[in-house]
Length: 498
Image (cartoon, rainbow, N blue to C red; front, side):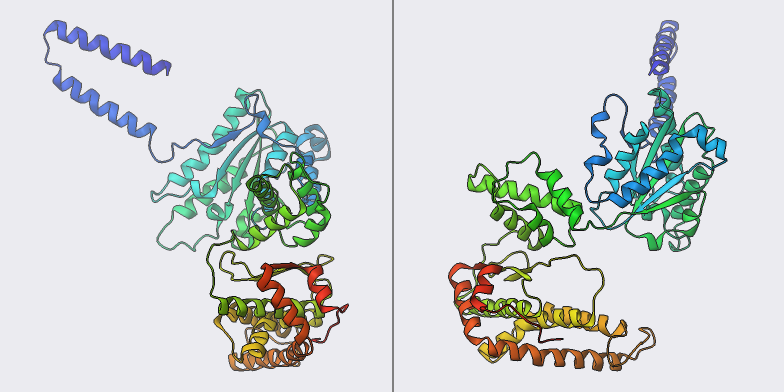
């Protein structure tokens, strides 16, 4: 800005002097205009992008502590250990340890990778510079490489300006920037950008005035270039997975600590019912529950509000569309079939049954399980197939035919049957998915589905009276709880489909 003001003063003085001498200044103005345009284009050229910066005195509150992140105890432990290597510089030198240059966070979306990077910056008392992989690649060759250089330069400059000795560069969606080279035919910009990132990371040293740590985040570890993952670049790979039941409870506690909860709220039950939810999903559950309470004019968030919020996050907003009476009865029969078989396959597995339209679903059964499962037996998979087929079988028993509403159920059942086959749990034994003929695979899937369907049909025929009670309750109230369903069945449940 200083040089711009001085230059403007000199040019103004020159123009006034030429006017006083009677010189035609139009050519001079033309040349000055060209120079000004060139300067403007240079300043605003592609690549003159400023990256988001978090850190320093003015924005310190935007950083978070590791204690503010729930459900990622293993990831936090691994990340802290890696950061301690960077913080304790003298001890690293005395032991001859090569400084860590990069940490790669991998895992599904919404699991807290960005939060972990921010917590790492605060843990190190560092400047935090954030960028997305999509910000580096343009149609102009060389722009991405220039932006990579600018990012590293900006991190060093900000750290020195704020009197700090380290900076964290966080690159989200790094698979866009660091995908395997040679896959983008006719567009070398991707490869040049990645090459520049590799060069910059190779140039990092523990003896620099500002120590830089690059943290990348991705949910596509499989497509990253091997050169990016070798030791000396991303030295640590930290898996940031979906939280388990304990982690989900911790996340719910964090996101409800500033919300008024009623006495009937059981966060433990909500945590148990939300298997497969990420931290972002759980934050949305807490927020949606507060919105529902506000909509109803309630002073506190009740357990019913949280359950409704879980349904909304899973299925979407409740819709106003009203099916005809005949369609509504078919939907009730379909969902009753799912729910009854689910209880017989796995007692206590149904949380609620609903025939209100949400998202793309005309009705749904929300299931829960006592413990998180990561390994599946053949009995468990056959039970899941039974639940998927039960809706269509119930329709056929009640109306003599099936509807298109079971299309997604059949796809799910076929996928589960494939897991049985490719897991070596079918009569075919151990098979290779690549070498198995399509016709043989089709016949094996059909055999499994037909066998399970026989057991499903027997359950629903035996439970005709209970099925009628469930359908009547759904038509009357649209929704029933799992406890109400179990009282209508009047049995503890047992498995007939394994």
